[in-house]
Amino acid sequence: MSPPSSGPGSPAGDDPLVEAYLARRANLIRFFAARTGSHAAAEDLAQELYLKVAGRPPGEVAENPAALLYRIATNLMVDRTRGEARASARDAHWRGAVHTTIAGEDIAQEPPADEAAASRQRLRQLVEAVAELPPQMQRAFTLHKLEGRSHADTALAMGISVKSVEKHISAALKNLTARLGR
Image (cartoon, helix red, strand yellow):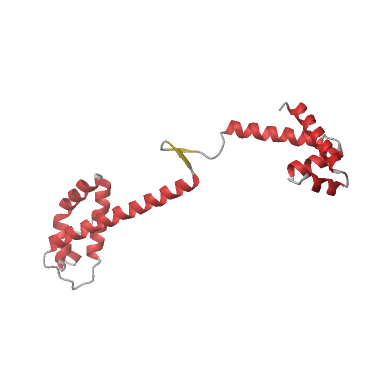
C-alpha cells in the first residue's frame, strides 16, 4: 500500500513534512534498505514513517522537513532494532529456561520416541509382574519401593515384623529380576 499522492484535498497539500516524504519516498526506501539489508523491512519502515508523519498534529511546523524526516526515520530504525533485541533476549531467556543447549545446539528434553515406547513397555511389564506377586509380598514391595516407606513403617502398616518385610521385599526383588531379566 503506497501513501496518497499530493493533489487537491490530499494531506500533502498543507503539510510540508508529508510533501517532503512523498518527494523523497524512493530515497527513504533506499536509506532504510541500505541500513537494514532488507527491501521488505525498508518498505515496512517507509510505511511506518508515513503513518508517523501524516499522523502528526496539524499546525506543527518543521524548519527543515528533509532533516526532520531522516531524523524520524533513524529513530524508527533504532526503535525497531531495540524491539528486535528485546524479543531476541526474551526468546533466548525462555529457550535457556526450557531447553538444554550443548555446543550451541538445542537438545530436546523429551526422550526419543523409541526410548519412550520401550520405557512404557517395561513399566507395563513391571506392573503386570508386581500384580502377580503373592499378596503379602506385593503389599510389602508396593509400600516400600513404590510409596517410599521405610521398613519400619511398612511393617507397622502391614502388622508384621521388620524382618518379615525385609524377607518379602528381598523375595519380590528376586522374583521381579528373574521375570523381567534385570
